[in-house]
Image (cartoon, rainbow, N blue to C red):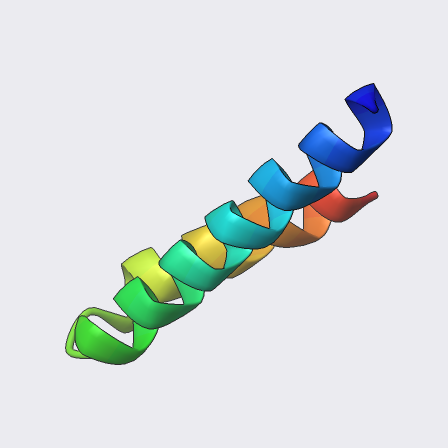
Length: 43
């Protein structure tokens, strides 16, 4: 059950960040930082 909760939290986090990137794509520098954090977080 812990794994399921973690998967749900990660999925929600990724969706939120992705939506934020599309909404705030006027700042490419921050977007690159967020994508890098997501990549490191997934690994």
